[in-house]
Amino acid sequence: TCILSSEYEFDEFVVSGGMAIFADTFLRPVDIVHFLGEKIVDIVVNVVNTAIYSCLDNKRDHPLIFEFGFCTLRRLCSDDSSRGIIVNHGGVVAVVDGMMSNLENASIQENGCNILWRLSGNDLGMKLNIVEADGVDVIMNVMISHGENASVLAEAFQALSCLSVDRTSRNFIAQQGGVMVIASSMSSLDKSVAVQEAGLAALCNIASDVDEDILDASNIISVVNSSLYHHAKNANVQRKGLALLYNLSIRGEGMKSKLLSSGALTIITKAVKNHTNSSKVVASALRILQNLSNTDECMMILLEKTTITLIIHAMMLHIENLKNAIIGCKILWTICEMSPKFIVIGLSGVEAIVCAMMVHYSSEYIQDMGCCILACSSSHLSISNDGDFNTDVFDLICKIVKVILSAMSGFPDSLEVQNNATTALRNMSKIEENIAVLNTEQVRVEVVLTQTMKRFPECQKFCLEVLEVLAM
Picture (cartoon, one colour):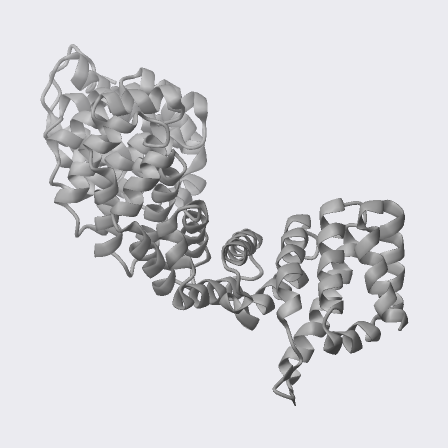
């Protein structure tokens, strides 16, 4: 207490030495906090914050105290209970003011930004407290002052992203030049993975609803495309970049046109090809393709055989992922609607739909969409090819019948499922070779169709047609 008193001209090296010991002690914070107990941590945090406030109040230029003090707080932020202790001792204001008074010190700024985003966590109230303590202002100053320092920028971007909690804060950050500064820094440090990852994540949050003129001025699409291009093999960069492109693609037709003219489609399909094993990359890429599928440019790419094969392969690899299965079904349905020929999705496309329906039997959306696709594709399946019996097609048709009946049994009160399923069965019954397959499930078909006619008279016509074929 004596050493830190405003009446005592304390020695920087003595206090900073104590801070250095604290920082070294909490190198493995969770274990040490558990060993020492929260009371000791409370004392340590109190001493650190008191030292910082003492320097600030008396306008003393002691950078080592801030450096080691911030290092201690940063390490303690890795422990859940310690974060609360830091906040209770006025840590937010101490960190923000400490950063303001040491703006040119990269170490202090890097640690300070890290502390702010760790303290904010998922607590909306804490995020707003940091904003009110001029947290956004100090982070903006950090990004401008350390525009070429990758380590500092990565932490600053992360902190700014955490503080973009609502439309008001996002617009405030954008109006202060946040989007422009992030985009400019990403362009300057395009080889830094840490800067690209953190920058893309920040832009994804901040740019979701800000004025489009601000986005255009920052050249955001070009920046994202460049990041994805230069880090094509990095799954995290691809995932975050694609998430940002998706957010941009849902803003309106104007932004869609800009994305298409930028060459983004080539980058998106390349991401799927390079990261087929990553469910998150695949999901993000397919969501964009689905969202852009109403444009001629995207449809041309979707109808290319290589693209369809890529989509089906990615869908099959992640067939157990409901999100990916839904997006895959959506795209294949779009392709079926836009193409007059079933051959476009082929047997592998139908097999992917059947697998999705089998795995996600409890998803009404998958069952409905699957029956839709099977309704338009099943009539093109033929067991024999030029007189030769095709075992693979026969097995596939057997599976189709089973998944259709399963969908009808699983969702007996869904008009959409029943209508699409009966349409698929009716179309299958129009091919003489398929009747033999339907006959193997004749009893079940009759029971299910009879129940459907009772519930939904509008399905009666197709149900009767199938039953008449089976009765022959």
